[in-house]
Image (tube, rainbow, N blue to C red):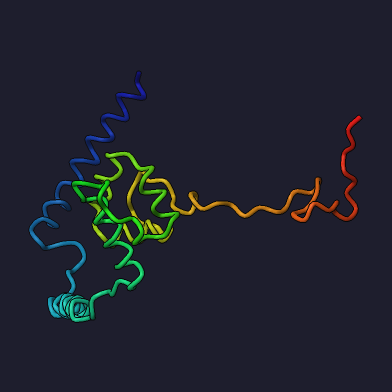
Length: 165
């Protein structure tokens, strides 16, 4: 208990002793000097120049494949009559993926725009959350089976065929 009392008294004494220093710093008479205004203006001008150069730089171009694929996919997403839309304009794996999407996912694609739709259709990062990957709709080309006859009906080398009993 006595320790708490001494701690409180010590904090009050430190606060009273720090008051004149705080007052002098507030009035600008004490503490570190501010940097000269010319240095700050020079830094601000350099930053403004770099931002102007970024604005003058040519706009980022969208690759042709992303743009054309995106226009077709986005056209399907915003179409009022999707059954009449010609899906032969897009690859088969993209068409299958489009036909498997829900209405909500198609609305998300319509809101995302043609560039994001094109990136999604090409299997790139599109930024559209909740869509299945297009690459997952491609038929997987796995290795040939290790047992059983080959395509010509002949037994495979080193693999005996199972015999019925």
